[in-house]
Length: 102
Image (tube, rainbow, N blue to C red; front, top):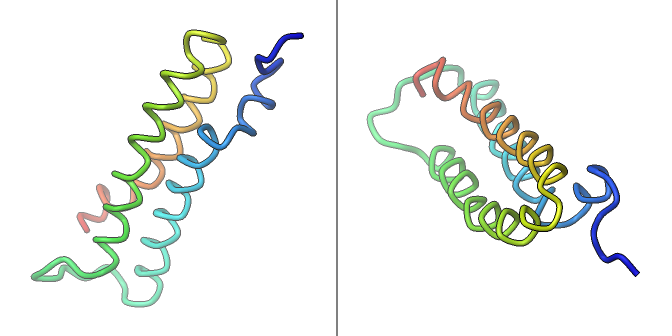
């Protein structure tokens, strides 16, 4: 009986695979809601939106490390595909902060 995921879809259903993606998407939504509510404003001090974004982005690093340690040795091809999705979601969350200089 094989305990390893049989596809990228089955691997992406593991919590260590989808939680970082969800955290990145939530961070993106937090930034977009802030932009819609207050516009693109330069604040003298970081507000709660910046702190929530930072916690979401930094909080996914240990989960990502666990995912790589657990699944990369077992199913490297599938793990790299899910890792690419995770990195893409993180870059999507970082893009508005970078391009709008928030």
